[in-house]
Image (cartoon, rainbow, N blue to C red; front, top):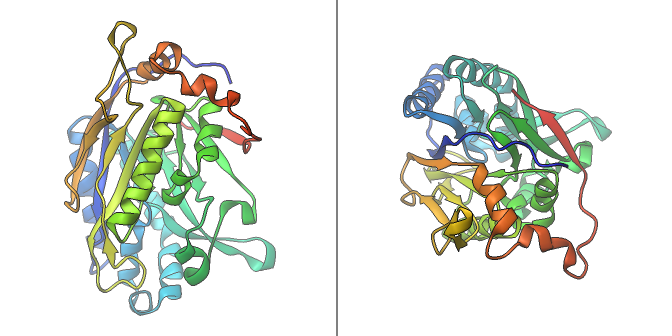
Length: 317
């Protein structure tokens, strides 16, 4: 794909989102309105929520609080309401929102399966989505959540007013060919929503996210769930910190001047908060055009570069 004209710099809000125990729908709605209103009030144009942040909705169903598999249906059944609320908030505030991912029942072979779906909303209220591609052992062996490819669908790149944006959900970030396919299709920004129950898990995703930023010379934003939710059979422990990563590079004359570790913003681990960061998509073109190293350009030169997954480009405005 040919390069697009770089978009203007914008502020991103990356959530360290706590799994609460809402008493009813009104409590959940009030929380989401508060979080979105706070970030939009700071001038953020892109709001990123984490993987499985929507699992707090299982608290509204007694079965969802006591049974692991019942929690899937409890949340999936509420997604039409959840998505309508996110669409309303995206329109009202004029922002892009990557909603917290959720189990979603999709009809298909054998009657259907649950997938882990991250829905992406435009300021117009329009919505598209990215389903998780690589399942963790917990998802595959205990929970029965299926990968995107099991029911059709695959990798999507969103052509937005902020730039070209891809989504790699948690474990997906640890597999380089997914992000590489996005970068080759033109991605300047990759969103990495995550949900991990240990610092080991958080660091696996973070290391993957930073490696993808290095390889593809792009921005990667990680948004985790945080806090304890002992009532939940699915997301009872949550560890992590939100971060914005880029390639560690420094060539000021070419407009490339990065921290030595490539970390542009980082939250305090475990604290419920927004982490704000300024993104300038023009920096991606600078990194890829005249960086100290050119990993994006040189990818194909490595032995066994291989065949990349196909990418569907979705216009989301």
